[in-house]
Image (cartoon, rainbow, N blue to C red; front, side):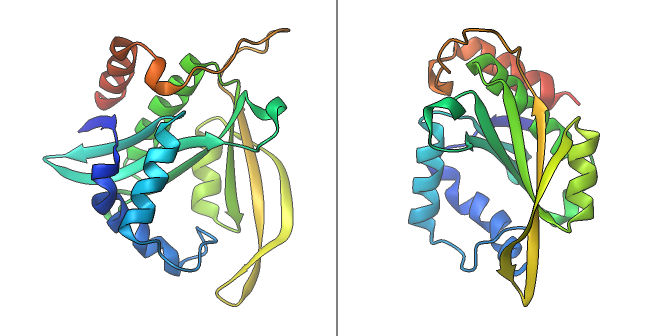
Length: 191
């Protein structure tokens, strides 16, 4: 198992993992984006945040990334996390590897709090986030309508950094020393 930074060139492999989720309520997206749009999303994320993938013997098994929680400047030290895995590798610990590496990289960037927005109900994802040290901070009831149902959004949060009186700016992931990124990815590839 190897974790590495994804790039726009991985768009097709990542899109093949994401595509089956479109039929579910895991994502509120109704239509699957095309390859070009998906590649642009990856590039946009990588301008500031980590976008990780896990592969084994050249096969991409899952991915996770961080992105801005909201647009106002006061949110700069918070990030929202997303994760998608191939169905045949769920529940085997891969999600914990990806999330662990992602949160460690976010902490190195200066992010203080990680958030996950989980469709409610989604017991498997809710258990996963609780196992990863997140706690439920609230539910937005009837926030979205998909597949004939009104669905809520459970908001999970977890500290990933220290809360100082005067936080420094969050460092874009590409400005972190490459050796630090490699150490984190190697560490979480070992699990």
